[in-house]
Structures are given as structure tokens and as C-alpha cells.
Image (cartoon, rainbow, N blue to C red; front, side):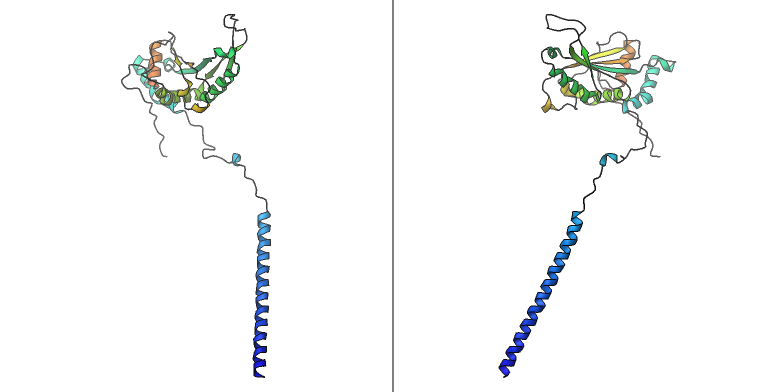
Amino acid sequence: MATKEKGAAKGGAKAGAAKGGAAKGGAAKGGAKGGASKGGKQGGQPRQAVDFTKRDHAGAGLPVPMPRLKAHYEQTVRAVLAKQFGFTNPMEIPSLEKIVINCGVGEAVKQPKLLDVVVEELALITGQKPVRRKAKKSVANFGLREGQEIGASVTMRGARMWEFLDRFVTVACPRIRDFRGLGTKSFDGRGNYTLGIKEQMIFPEINYDMVEQIHGMDITFVTTATKDAHALALLHQLGMPFRGDDKPVTPKVAQPSAA
């Protein structure tokens, strides 16, 4: 009798333990299902798209700053030129009026696609859309017809003009191969200076791997000066590295106060 009672007690304990484990397992399964259902609801909500183009940048609402080289001209160059040449009238002081870049593509007569590449590169260099130039007369020896597109040009004024001159003087000129300075004999007698560039690779905006053909361009700096000496002094004070200068002029702009 004692052995039967012990066996019954052991069997009841095992059955209770099994039921308790089943209940716990069911609770665990239920919790897992509940968590999965909750997680499924949270994960199923669509994420709202954020339009980053409508965010304001750090300088939003502030006035557009003056180009660095123009500030140098207003703060330093005007006083230096007035003292050097004895200008009494402020309107006599020469200034930079515009910069014209001209690029002729003679091979565009046979390959019109080359002109599209040149126009794209000029747009990258200047930040302005170039104008396609057409032939004024027909030349039978070159197979050229009147009205055919054979070049492109860009005319820059205002802030783009000052920023281009700053980049040309500080970045592009030092990258010219075997550069020893710009010549001083390219003035036209009316205060305008023209120079030729053999490679467009000197500008950092041009990617070397994307260049299909190397071409040059002519850059003309048009000033309000009436004499070449005045224009030479103006461009020299703006930082143009002319040949024969011991030390080129580096533009220095007065920094605004912390207040």
C-alpha cells in the first residue's frame, strides 16, 4: 500500500509539473505572439518622407556677401591707384568692366558634337551658359558656310566676373605648365588686356578623366581705363602675376569685426 501511494504521489507531481510547464509555455507563446503583433503594427507604419530641399541653410536670411576680390578693390586698390596716378576725381579711377572668354572650334565644321563638349566645359568654368557663335562669311577652302556654328563665348559681369578673376589668379595660373608669368605686351592701347590659354585643364572644374579633346581659349579683361599703364596697374593690384614681378600682389581683405 505504501508503495502504491508513493507512486501515485509521484505521478500527480509529474502531471502538475507538466501542466504548469504547458501553461508557462502557452503564456510565453502568447507573449511572443503579442510582441510580434505589436511589433508588426509598429513596423507596418509607412515612414514619412523628408524633403531636404526645403530646409533653410545656415546663411538663410543674411545678405549676400561681397566677392573677396571686389572687397579688396574697394578697400585697397582704389586708394593705391588714386595716389599713384594722382586722380582727384573718384570716377577717374579705373575699374574692371567685364571679362569675355572666346573659344573657336574649327573642327566643329566636320564634327558638330565637339562644339557641344566645349559649350559644356565653358559652362562649368564660368558658371554661365555660353553663346554659340556662327560664321560671318563662307570660306570654300575650309568647307565653311555662312551661319554655321564654329565657336562659343561667355561674357561675365558683376559678382561672377570678380569670382572668376579670383579663381583664375589664385588657382588656375599656378597650374599652367612651365608658368613664368603673364606677358605685358598684350594690351590693345585702350586699357584692355587679352591672353591666350592653351589647355582648359588648368581650371579645377574640369575633370581630367572626362576630357575628350584639349583645346584653348582667349580671355579678355575689359577695363574702364583709357591708357595701358592704368590698366596694367589695376590688374597688377588685383593680383595678376605679370612676368618680371619679383613678388606678385596678394589681395588682402579686412575681416569684419566680431560684433
